[in-house]
Image (tube, rainbow, N blue to C red; front, side):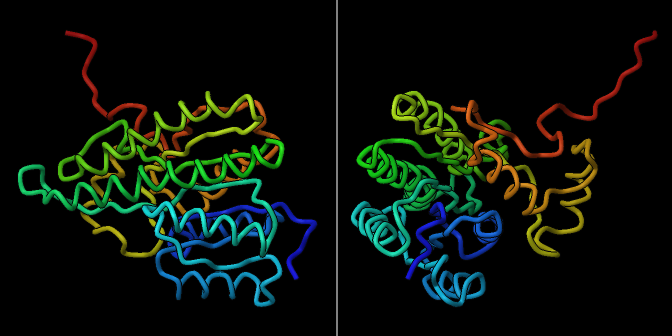
Length: 257
């Protein structure tokens, strides 16, 4: 049987990378966690590693682009673990495509996962929370790409900029139901060794005042805070976690002639 004494959190894209780190952190903080992912095998692996008994962690296959799957998974989570009080919209993809060569399907896929998926899961969660009398918190994963574009990522940047504004709009609509909605915008995060080339890493570090790349725990900790009672008066915000990357660029010039 599930643990009825634990608050329940749904994390999308939780089988790998940031999603897994977020699921692990929330479970450590005392949540029952629904690990959802398109990769069902990996989702079950994560859930088994966190709680072999299945009493506080369950895995669910979920394509966040499919409304009927989202509805079915939220219903299953409510049955298996209890009504979710927290949602982390983490599922996302970030392929590179030049604008002129980008297939239409690539645009649709990125916007579908990153933005439509966030909408569908937020809608399902909010409807369930309102039926339960309100309350709850949502954290959406945005990106510094929402504010600082790069070549080869017009679809990704557009999707994450959309997540930021969707966060603000949904916070306005859901506030009267005591549902808070915030976002986290990670900068360059290295989840595993060698994830980016040494050359790219070295170049990027010159633009990060903190002088290191981000870690999965940096994001998981921020998400956990935004879901916690300590963040009760934070709503409709996008918290940038980038070591200072967006603060400016390391350009210098002499003030004297």
